[in-house]
Length: 111
Length: 113
Image (cartoon, rainbow over all chains, first blue to last red; front, side):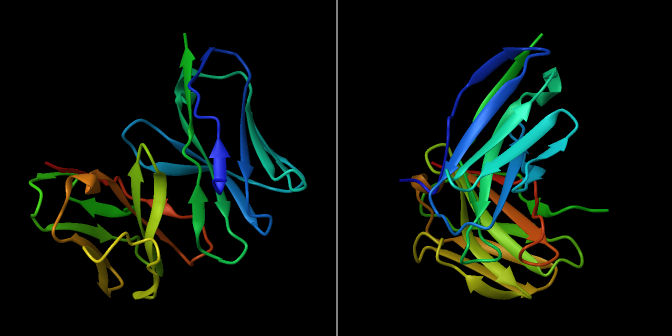
């Protein structure tokens, strides 16, 4: 089983739609969780951290289920500018520096 | 403020040639990471430096790959000899400390013919 698994997509949604991405991780000792965004031919950028109680940043909501080892990202009222690849990222429990990246989910928001 | 600076942005070379990728981390950051991204394997950590010292090189694929960090403002990743399967995007990232958010450079798009 891969350390971090994501549905690769692609997801094609109209503007204004709500879209959800899911991610599972295999290491139960994982400590920290993040969503990164990567635009085409660009570098990954931190979108948001994921906290145990769930957290929201504007139109973006992240949730963590430690029992199921499952992370989600919800985007409400999607914009054309949300089109990108979304990477699920986990910091392993045995390391305070190593990030393990999922292969990403491609989102295209259409006018 | 300047971000992480990588050079070159693109490199195309023939197999067997030596390739050197360069990275300047953000000033004040003591942690530096080299990653490789491919369609098949996604983004993988190659090596991690802390205060210019290699801490974890378990991701370096084989002896053809080497990385150095001679000072706090410069690091290189070298491939010698290069092979077509080394074709990928190589990212350098830095962070204030190892567990702080990592800031990525623009990457070097490497093609080995």
